[in-house]
Amino acid sequence: MKCGVAVWNWLVPPRTLTDFVPELLSEGFEAISVQPRQVFGLDEPELADLNALLDEHQTPVTVHAAAGAFTEDLMQGLLERLGARFHAVTFDGIRSWAPVGMRWNAGRMVETLLMVERLGAGVGVRYGIEDFPIDAVAMEEFGEDLQPVLGNERWGMLVDIGHLNLRRHDAEYFGRLSVEENIERLPTTVHEVHVHDNPGDRDMHMPLGTGPLDFRAAAAGLRSIGFDGISTIEVCPSLHGRRPEEVWETRAESLNLWREAWGG
Image 1: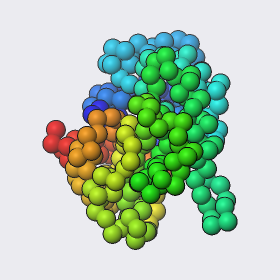
Image 2: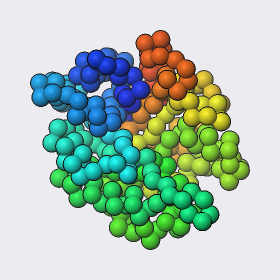
Image 3: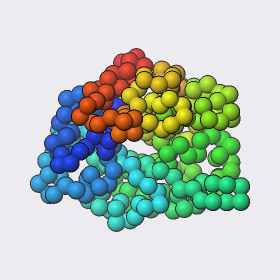
Image 4: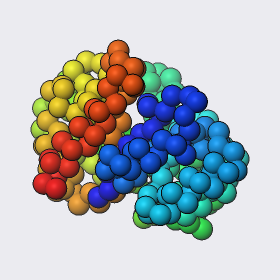
């Protein structure tokens, strides 16, 4: 497992990835998670400097985006700019109204996944949807739509343990199970984990250990399923009423707590 950090929550203009990544590496992070705009916002010299730094430290890059807005041009542009450094892309899913309420639009999401599969084959980009499919029941419900990606080792999912905390507080279906049991029920490979805390009723992306999430149990559950991907610290100061410059140290504090939970 490598431990990374989501940069979009901290990268305040005029700072760019090129001058921010050295700071993150010095804090002990081993990977970075970006949104496409942070990569496309670099000019050629800045991009060359960033890639040299990533190569020097063997730092993989994961990309997080919206499945409904991720185009072939975006994917191709990221491949051209990042090359083999581009480890994985994960997506916020698409939901549409149905007679029974909001429902995952698995067909549309799979269209995006298949585009990534096709364009990213040369460098082996992994791909998946955040928190989908969440268990065997969801896999059965959406299995026909997912059929084109089933069995592909590059397909998997991102699981967000902050969202797991919200589900356990909000829905008896998830709350009746322990943190570990929820994780052990995940039906496909986990490529990436988003790590943050919250009070259980709002998605505040707080530092690890400042809410009721049993992150040690989450780490145990992930170990039990053989997780060996990238853990991304996704603390977001603005979502809990702080400014990045006031609480920058919470990045490394959350990283250290997560590593301790893994016994490292």
